[in-house]
Length: 92
Image 1 (cartoon, one colour):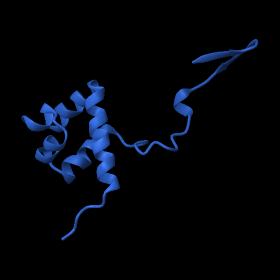
Image 2 (cartoon, one colour):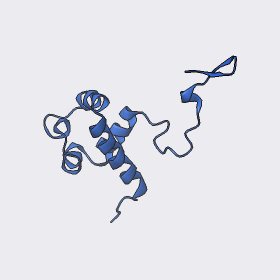
Image 3 (cartoon, one colour):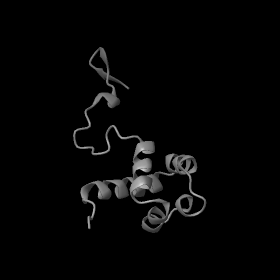
Image 4 (cartoon, helix red, strand yellow):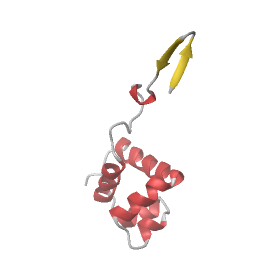
């Protein structure tokens, strides 16, 4: 992105801004989804987030493809991940 200040052209890189308040910064969608599958399993994920790719023949590949193309679904899965990270696991 180029912004003109007077006669000087300055390039601003929006990706260079720090992500101080972003808890998902540095976490790939694949890592996020893998951790959820390991922690909850596909069945529980399908119950918590009603997405067909979690309930009908789920796989990491098909789920990643769907979530990358569907912003509303990705937002729900990211919210589930953050909720899982905030609440400690129940131990017997």
